[in-house]
Length: 110
Image (cartoon, rainbow, N blue to C red):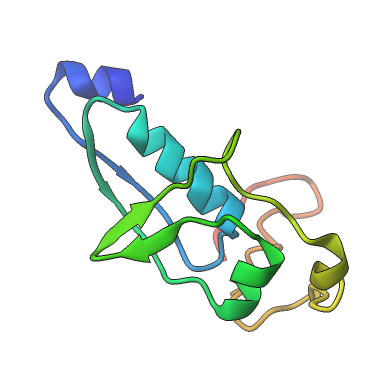
């Protein structure tokens, strides 16, 4: 998609909502670094607990996300620490996104 946009001089704007883990944001940062027509990256600051659970997550400095020089996406997962933050079945921001299909499989908007 980015290559098609580049042909028409359209810059990218990767979506980085607050409910995406630091791993998803790291992937977006690397995608932006490798896209010739990169435009802007939607970003958020990570809580201290997220930074502890996901060592190496992108850092936000002076309005820019900065990737590190580790291999791959440069991010890791501390599984023992992550176990202290279990996912609940119905987080307050979910807005019923888990109920997007009827029993017959028909897609519906929440």
